[in-house]
Image (cartoon, rainbow, N blue to C red; front, side, top):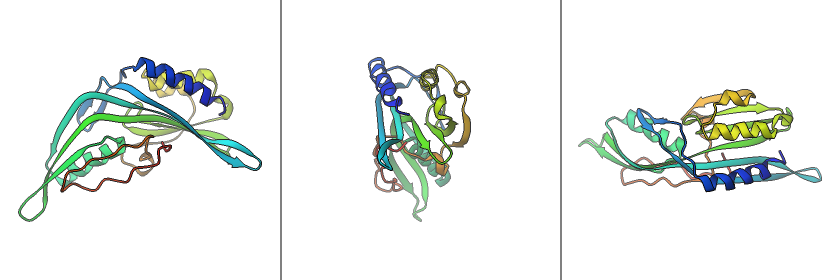
Length: 219
């Protein structure tokens, strides 16, 4: 775990210069999203005290996907509005939402406006009880989260190189090995873990309240 800060500091500086475009396509419901440029690379670690020494609690590496596209989407039922709103919150895409109501004050339509920008990231979390390292991936190969478990000695530089290749779309998750701890689609409780740093959600009058921002170091 102690080698990760030096490794990802170097990766962060390299990718910040390249500003690569992800070869992957994502989907917001039935809306294809591609040609996303990667930037705003971020790395941080948290220490904790164990007996008389400090050890790493976790490491976070995250980044932003962005494009110049702006979307204006109308949904015509409360169910469709709630579904899209939940997906946007889960992906941490800032948006404006205008709600239309009928004469009985029932919701009949919702209009979403937003620029396509969201974050992806990886979190390395030590699990001392079982002597493993849990690696959480969020918004990498799709808009959801999954977690792999590794032995500490498995986190070698070749594995980290494959992990960065996975982030950049050069290979798929099976190239990483590891053991799957969970895989959930967007909107499930454990998948809704925010990516640092947090983003604001903007809302027009009549919209549904947005959740509070999360601490910057959570992923």
